[in-house]
Image (cartoon, rainbow, N blue to C red; front, top):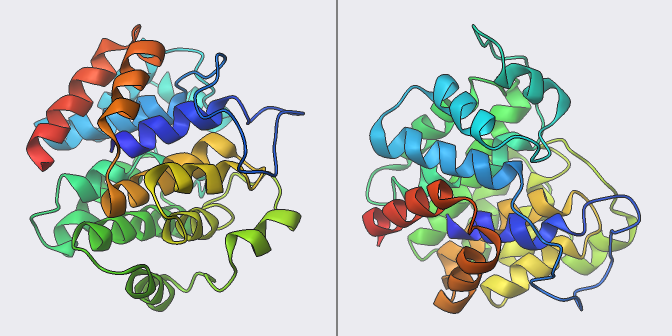
Length: 261
């Protein structure tokens, strides 16, 4: 799950107009990096599943506590609704926050992990593509945690979800553009993770596509984390330099790591 937080932080600086890049050669932790809505929502989902809390109100509470973090328009309005209802979204926000569903169910069945994915997704992203994107991300992480090879994970995701994972990162990159849908984010992010040689390499792959950089990296990051782990020095730097003002995120991520190690 730290993979999602770190992917978000590193990718945050390359998301805005004129900041997108098409190369893996960039400063990993830049001075203008910050945690965004991807980190806030991932931490909220972790707390929901760790403490068996209601999904909608817990997400709202976390996001209200961390305003101005780049929330999408529909979701931003949903945060402040007195009686929040799902709004049929298939945005990639479904996938960027879902990694705790896999990590916190690593010792349980895939059905448990997918049920957790649906539980934290359907409160907002109840479109079939939104649920699918979250489930595919959960499935990929869960398989990686069980030591399945990239080829096995790729075949399983293609078979179960019908995503096209035939292109390499180098083939995707030239024509890829900003896309906030699950169907335009999740397959590419999974490819970035499966093709990587390390956690950092996966994050660099994702950001180099030149799209919704923080979310691509927040999806690819936890898959790569499950495959390769995240170096302790990277987590330590993220905590010290970018999460000093968000002790609640650090606390729930550390609690989650204790449970899943």
